[in-house]
Structures are given as structure tokens and as C-alpha cells.
Image (cartoon, rainbow, N blue to C red; front, top):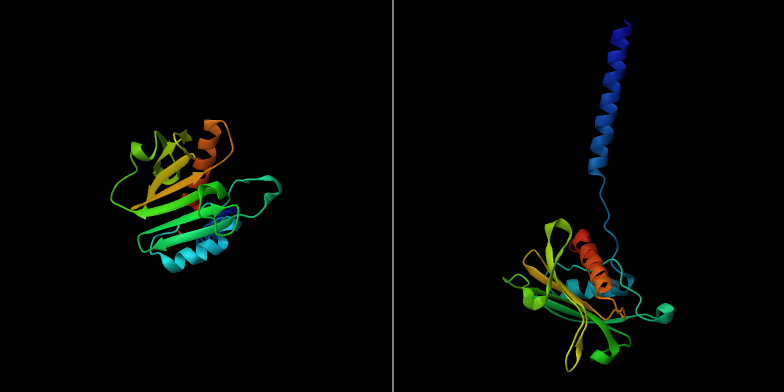
Length: 182
């Protein structure tokens, strides 16, 4: 009698674990929200492009006082570009702090898009290009590929250490990949 009761309790416990396990498997996972400065940008991009929109969940603070960024977009069916400006309708390097690009292409990012290979989430590989200056300076950039689309994040981070620039940009790319298309 006692062994039957133990088996019954063990069976009930196993059933409870199975039910709890299946309930946990069905519970939807909510991805991290898009960076607050990009919330309205996301809506605009989704209305103008057919590309999967990959955006980070946060952006670095670009200046004292956490003043707002002013994103402006350009988009069509096969590409989009977001300029992160310090003033509304920024259209020049002097007032921008970065760019987020996407382009549907058959070509994987090559060394031309970044000097160093970077391992990213979900088995993705990216390319990182540190700050480079000639007649003008190009900010540090990370380029990665997902679902036949090349994504590039180019940000003026005001950090003088290239290893830190690389880790910040890698983190942003990983956030976008983790959240998936928005």
C-alpha cells in the first residue's frame, strides 16, 4: 500500500513538472525594447522598408545631460539609413553622432567593411573597423549580416580606446541580433 502511494505521489509530481515545463515552454519571451531614441524611428522604418529592422536596445550617452538625439531616416524596399543627430534634421557630419544602415545584398561584409572579424550572437560574424582619419574621420563601425541583409552601426563614441569602441559596438550588434526583427 505504501509503495503504491509513493508511486502515485511520484507520478503526480512528474505530471506537475511536465505541466509546468510545458507552460514555461509556451510562455512568450518579450525582447528588450528598442532604444528609446529609436522608438518613433522604428515605426517610420517599418512603414518604408521591407527589410527586417534590427535596432539595438540602448544607445550610448553622447553628451552631458543626456540631451535627446534626433534620428532622421531614409529608406526604400532594400535599404535604410538612420542618422543620429544632435539637432533636428541633422544632415551633416558636424551635428551627427552616428549612423545605422541596412542593405539587402548577396555579399557578406568583407575586410573592406572592417579590418577585424568579430564573433556575435546566434553564430553571426561581423567586421569591426576602428576610427580612421584621413582628410576627415570615419567613426568606429561594426558591420554584420543577418537574413541576407548587411547592417552597419557607425558611432562617434568619444572614447579614445579602440578596444572600448569595439566592445560597445559589439554589444549593440548583439542586442539587435538577440531582439531580432522588430
